[in-house]
Length: 556
View (cartoon, one colour):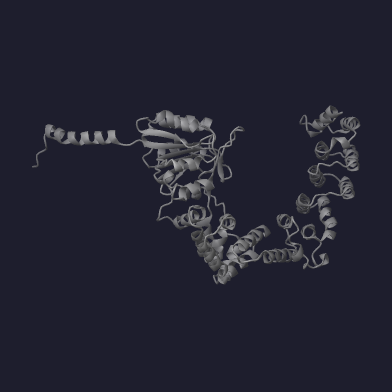
């Protein structure tokens, strides 16, 4: 039989190891808890109060007196072991504050730049845990989708419709850039990222929950790089989730490399142009997923002075007819004119289209949509904005006469914005249409081409006054309100309509026009009395009609 060692021998063997462990613990460097507090400080203070000072030191990265505080942290070579970010994050573009006196914010684009730029990557490279206290910070819903034109481009490239759909879904999974995936990209290699898949608790609630967590011994888990079941359970009713940062073996690793090439400003311009060229050689469907990033990078390169190497790389890109052909086919097939317009601008910057070529391409797309009666309010917005300085005039001169297109408000508005002035009356008629889509088109058109002529304004107002009431008339009146009318005859027409209508919503819409109008063009005492005598009493208490009457009386 094997003899057991004596207790004394066991103790003698254990003591040296215990001493070494104690010495190692005593010499263990403190972990750095970086905090980015752009809104509530409840979360930061809960961590600060409960983590022992001999194990953790805190560094607040936000410097209220300077906007470049993240870059400042990079220059100071701060390295974070734990990161706590507190701020609203509703739309996924930035952490921000709801405090009126605060301008502090943290764009995700700046986080990406910090994570990807060699001179700053140390800020996040050692992270063991990230705590994101903001709504939707780990929401997994894609922010970008594989569009119809992306699928069609894959079919044009020779894939079957079923294969094209499957590949488009795979591209969406890889490049859809949900909030969760963007955070995984930023915090590459971080073992644990905590955040929220939907609504997050405000600091006033999150702080006490963290206190409960720490009082139950949760502090021992901080900085260990492993997900805490206790913390997730405590916040489970408010959608807390955890994820891990992207690793080299991850499906997203290639996507992260692309993102970093897009945002790393330290790269030489020639390298950035060569990256663009390599990217544009890929399937057009994948290129389309990067459209916003392409727009930003090509705009940056168009403004920046280029080295001789970059000029040579740009010339090589401009001469790539295969990539150019695939890209322009995708642009011409875009479901939305705004997407096509943006792609044409990018093609100009890449040297694939001259300014005149890009304008001609856009006008041809407008022509094709008008012929199919496929023009939408969003398309009209794009056409009018693109021709704000009448730069499309020469290309638009080649358009067919108006009679060649269907008689719709959208066609009329688009053609009017391209210089066919005789289409303006038809576009304005959409304002009094019963069809909400027609009215929306007219409203978009008028934002770009407002009424300047008094006779035209009076004619439009008279037509609105003849409408039978209801939602269409309210919509039309709301459009007039944005014009801040100063014409006496127009205001008189609206004042006469007020007592005739039996709709409180129409009366409120009229008041909305009058309260924004030029008071010098109104007979204020008489109008105030007329409004008070004929108004339909609101069951909800004071409304805009009451506010208008008080303002008229005060201005008398």
